[in-house]
Image (cartoon, rainbow, N blue to C red; front, side, top):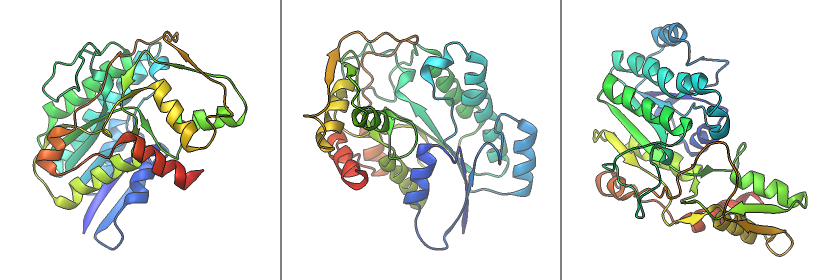
Length: 284
């Protein structure tokens, strides 16, 4: 039996991981919230790992508020970098495997073709910089790890673009959505399946991978697809804007290439529009 730790249990990805978990007695999975385990507390992590031995540690806990991170840098780095190091050190002592979730925002967005794992990183906001630091401390701490960079994550759970659009549309609000950024909306349920496929396969092809749904679009395209698939496109006031003022800078282009993970780990990412349509069909 494999014993697995999932941090950030209240977050959307952890909930999708729980939904996608294989049935049966092959895995004992501990889903921990901050109340159960404060990952910013090295002592608490040491004590918890002293009582429990894990084969895999899946760290979905993160500081993800891109805007707020600009004025709360210390907390962003504490959660996205320092905590990763504490967890990795504990995981390494037990010879476990660490799975870390990272972001397309480690890039500056100046490229015009999908980013590869070998492309130079250059984050332009605090969130991206703190997540990149988390990648670096993990790679420096241990060898048995997978870093999965993903993009524009959404699901049926929590606060995300999908749920915000559905909520505001139902309230009759005017939706003004930017066309300035190009990326790939990624269904957290697909990412959860990717994570489980890595664990079930017992692969030792450790390292850095990109995983997002395939294809690309703007935030406006994303909103349009949400409204179309929920039959609200004709009844919702939807407007484009090229410039949407934000405190934090965003990369203009942050599409990720998932070619490496498909070739080396056999994980194929679904088309983002098809995945979105399937999810909305199930929840609306």
